[in-house]
Amino acid sequence: VVLHPTAEILARYEQVRSGLRRVKQRPGTVAHVDEPARTRDGVEIELLANIDLPEELDLYADSGARGIGLYRSEFLYMETDPRLPSEDDHLQMYRRLLDAAAPHPAMIRTYDLGGRKLAREMMESTEDNPVLGLRGIRLTLARPQIFHTQLRGLLRAGAGRDLWIMAPMVSRVEEVRALRAELTAVAGALAAEGVPHAQDCKVGIMIEIPAAAIVADLFAREADFFAVGTNDLIQYSLAVDRNNQHVADLYEPLHPAILRMLRFVAAEGRKAGIPVSLCGEMGGDARLTPLLVGLGLRRLSAHPRSLQRLRRVVAELDAERLVELADRCCGLATAAEVEELLRREEEPSQVLSA
Ligand code: PEP
Ligand code: MG
Image (tube, rainbow, N blue to C red; front, side, top):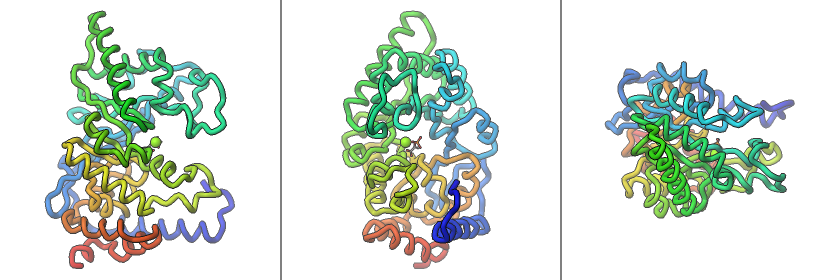
């Protein structure tokens, strides 16, 4: 919500709205929601759902999503606030998610608390710069007891289900190894107690810190999958606080640095044979779908309400030819130039005949 918007801000959002309207009104052959979304040239684009609140699971069934691409587990904490979720709270919620997503996977993110997301029970002192502080995987690894409660709930819920666990705010390979070590310890304890638990869940990471994007090849040897969090990747790459209105103009998803990172991460994931999804806000913006497909992304996760529109746009794309458009975008100097090129090429039919 922008209070008292200036004429400039109004004009910008008007532009966004008319872009969305054009996408919405475009006729298109829409594959039945039970079918995977496919481009015109037959490339499958997996559309997954981001779920924050349990009520959103009601939208999941009709969305055509092929799995849950992001569950932000800190929302569970917000629901049980003022106490931390118990093992049973974790178990019940994750079972619901996994059952809703079946036969497809549910990617459940471990707590992304810290930063701006309050976690009184977990923080011992305040930080001058919390967004660069004990946040995400850093905080959970520093609070093993609390983390074990979550991991026990996760592993128990994953028994016989397709569970993909992912860690937020990963900047170092050591963090992936530490997460695996914690999971091994928790699984060992559950086995000793005779409690059923997941035997072969996938362990992946959010790519949302530039360091992780730049060495995606190294992370691809350690992680089973990547989920690109563009909301933070933009914030940390461009050094622009995602919640600070004074620098909102500088928060540019189309900055060539971001596009090149996305292209690189997608390529390294493909080389290593691991799935790469994009679950930040960019993934739900239908105007950007041609670009994301051209950059090599094959899995997009967004709010369930956005998926129909994405499906419609995907059906009109020619993935092969969009590689060239994406490469041209990566070679431009400014986000404004990228935006202009995308606008010119907006009608996929024009892209096809270009
Ligand atoms: C992101 O950073 O893009 C993301 C999906 O995570 P969150 O918005 O929860 O930080
Ligand atoms: Mg994030």
